[in-house]
Length: 452
Image (cartoon, rainbow, N blue to C red):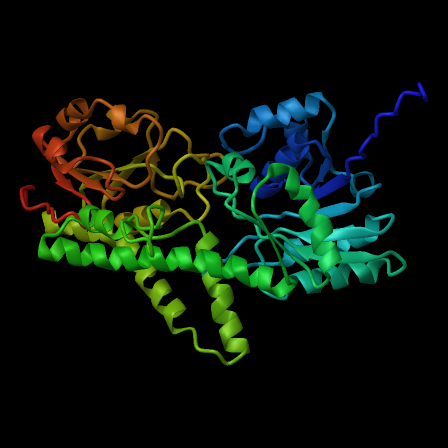
């Protein structure tokens, strides 16, 4: 009998390069590294790279800082401006640039396409190009063509992996994803990429390239449609005296709708993310002569939502000129520090144009990168902000907002009007504390407010 010891088989982990240093790329880098892969992330901003090398991302995201630092320490995660170094020996190259949008929510692809040129220029062998940026159908093939053109001697396979990370809970939504979708024109390529995600033990959908691209558009547009739908219902609830919260509660018991349905009335979708996918579908409809009537209606409803605050205020005051309005929350969604296409900015600009004095407070908002609205005064403390206000408007919540001393806020105000665009508070409780409360679709009004 052989006494020879069986050698332990060593499974080599693939090397991953991630192009981009924004929110998506940084989260993807840290999460892949924590899964056990060797990850090198590359970008052009030397200052941002230096901060990341110290474990300090430029944006707020729960768990991310610790995740980065842990994987920097064990040597699985690296950040660099050197494309040649980043691409050296990389088998999978992810384009994970946060695709910017213009003022019409249309994607601007210059940075993504330039990333393709750099990948093609600096790669030193065969790669699987994995497009994770939020881009219109057909962009992945265009990007691969750019890569192949730079160095045609090397093979460049292509896959598209739509990201469904949610700001403020991106790490959680990576490790506990509802599903990962991997699309490619070649099944064996899609399966290779799918293997990267299998250690996470989450559902994986392997499909065609354009089906994966369309799945991203369709998913976000479905969510946007649900938002516009419930916002129209909430407007009607206000007029007939119904409570939209009770309406939604009844709806969610229907299995065809479900407990997790995206039915939260408020100010509509912002940030450019959902709007970008709707615009992509509208453009595809124009290209292929396919009418997108529902998409047009969803956008039309959403454009009106920023006016909700001004309309509520003018139900209370004949004019808001000279009125002092305090805005609670500036970021485009809770749990983040970004003001990217925040609806708060639109509301504030509108109020300033009407001649109101507008103040704001947000404990997370990053106001150091030219994000603040001209004419807006930002306060370091919500109680100072409330002093002399004719109304407080909750636009974006944050951890701890429910624990503020609301009687103290009320006593500091000149008029006790409180507009809760997130329906975070109980109307009866706020009324008991002396506020004239107005939620969204809750059958309440500002009828008790002063008209002076």
